[in-house]
Image 1 (spheres, rainbow, N blue to C red):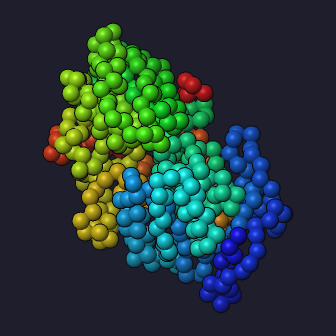
Image 2: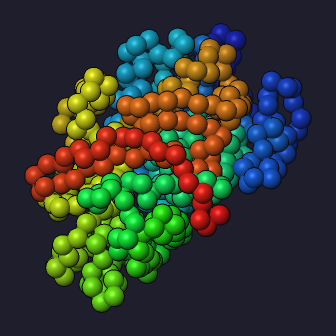
Image 3: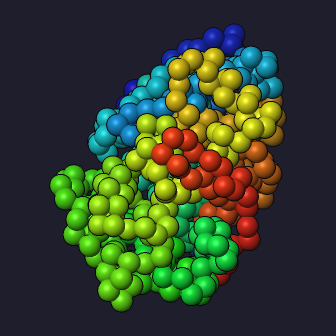
Length: 428
């Protein structure tokens, strides 16, 4: 194992050999000890094996590691850098500048994602991680073992049930007695503002996260009175071979409402699959309501024509001082940057981290930050991501969504970001 990086009394970095040991230490190192799991499935923060509790910290700097999936989410790195530059231009956080030594690509594989995270923690000695990698499930055991606070957007269930992972949208599918109220937002797309009595098909892929989310959303819609006619999870997902023909999946949807097309089709899969299904449905003559979570991108606005996008952030088109400041910060880093979903994943993940650092204060360590965040942390942010509540959001979604639609030339905001009360989890 590579030597960890610690702070010398002079304030300069020095290298120190040694390994993280399963041993009791002082009360200040709250995370010391052997690994265990709490009764609710979250790793117990006072019994986890940890690395250097003050890694990546000096009196003037906080070193952060960034991991992105360049195949799908390359724009996220620009968003992260823009938000950190904003903080640094304002004097940093409690006198410390946020330093990103390296932006690592997860390489599109679990193995390379694990290598990237290990390198940032063990070689570069970062304090925390901000990530939009879709391989958190693979890197999470090491993150927990080392006690590294990790921040990002909750793509899947890997963001759930851990004291060390903080997703600004929470646990996407929900694992507690209360969870998403997706039916409320789906209902807003109908003229009568309810799912009751309407025929709805939910289409996902064969990935574990898509299957779980599709099952949950379908159950919530049904529990709220929707006429659920199909839950489809046979399409190959992100880790499978690309789909060559979407016609069979579209055909099943078109016949799902008693031989007819349903009024509403929700797609929960990758951007590539969503685009393929959209083309197949339109080619089959579908004229109902289409809704997905991935086609909010200027490059896809024509393909998304007539469709609706739900997202866990304020749309870039919302004209408020806060959103203008965010876009200006992004353009200061990259003048021609497109305003996309992955860009938002990065920007708002970094924004969450900055806000949490501000609340943590000057006396900072990994363990003190994690302990504070898991001690009924609450912050309302109506502009960017709605609200942040931990530890609740380790097991539940934030309950905040916005809605835009495409006319083929531009996206129009149909509903700004709003948060609703969660309902009982029908599949808990």
